View 1 (cartoon, rainbow, N blue to C red):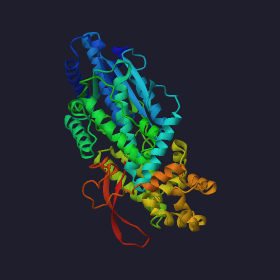
View 2 (cartoon, rainbow, N blue to C red; view 1 turned 90 degrees about the horizontal axis):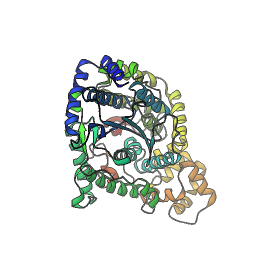
View 3 (tube, rainbow, N blue to C red; view 1 turned 90 degrees about the vertical axis):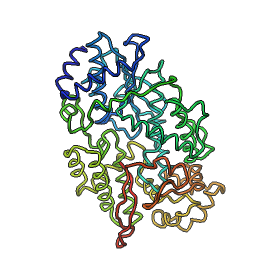
View 4 (cartoon, rainbow, N blue to C red; view 1 turned 180 degrees about the vertical axis):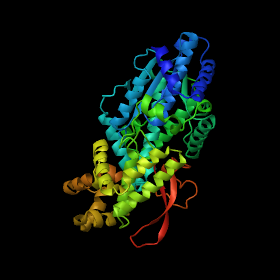
Length: 491
């Protein structure tokens, strides 16, 4: 079986990439522990189910098979997928097809894992989304979105990025642990991640004890402190259960290291298009492929929120806002060197299709997260933060029959005895409980300025500091208003 799998890979990999896999396999062999047989060594590959990680997995599989051909034995490969509510079934089906093409499921040296929140189990394409994880994702989006007026990157990515790092730790510590984590990031990129986390922890007084700061274990400990502080701010310090649910594990081997394949391979998906779409069976689904992501539908919701903001806040049209986001996101695709056919596919999907895409994104928001358009609109206004500074505007525009009840709403949010009818109305319109709305009422509104320099003083401002997925655009904040700069973020 392994000989056949290697023969198939040699036929579809370019000579350059196959030779790179051989070189990289030799380096990996030298990096693995030499005090026990090669077949006892375990490496971890994180697999998100997108086009780039599918190629990375293929490359590492080639390395595994090369070492088997040379030594008659090879390392064990643990492949772990971190699933969230924004990952549609089409991604799971892509993963399943890739596993089949690479013959991973039938190889006892391959362990395929699915991580839902803190739960680690064998991969199964038919396992439904975990309801607790979906609910956690939904509330994270709403609470962060209300704090940032639905700024795309923090709203969808802050909690997701922290969850992804936690999944590394969970997979690396599972069932006896692993010897190495294989990554496609360069040594410089890895160093930059470590420095970013260290500086962020130092800035906010969140560093672990000095004797617990080294290596990947120390990296996880610092991120756990950051995560706990971040979610205490987002959900309120009294939400101890929610905060604990977002803890980042540090239960990994001392001295666990990363092994980079970056110098031995090339990632431009256009260079291995046939491998991706024909041999691996990777399909670019209408939901899962969304702008710069091929394993997540959230960028479509980012576009939806921008369009809703233009329509409801700026007095323009939904189509205007959608066009602004599409131009921004296609620019990002160009910077990431996406194949021209994928850029054109995305352009055609949205061109003149505002009504169709609005319906599709409303349906996706409801299916993936249980969110209605009314709740997304409320998030765009962010009316509850800063003691309800934007409450009157929101009520006048979106809940006009409650406009005269604004003083009662303020009192309710400030802790007055609950009015069942008013509470029910607010909870339905926002998707949040009264307690969560009261947390927002006490919280600050964080809107990144187009001219802002570094951070604005709070942890939520700094999580994505230096993030490249943003751009200052020229827009109008009213139908006939002047052009003004606005910082747009997204994927």
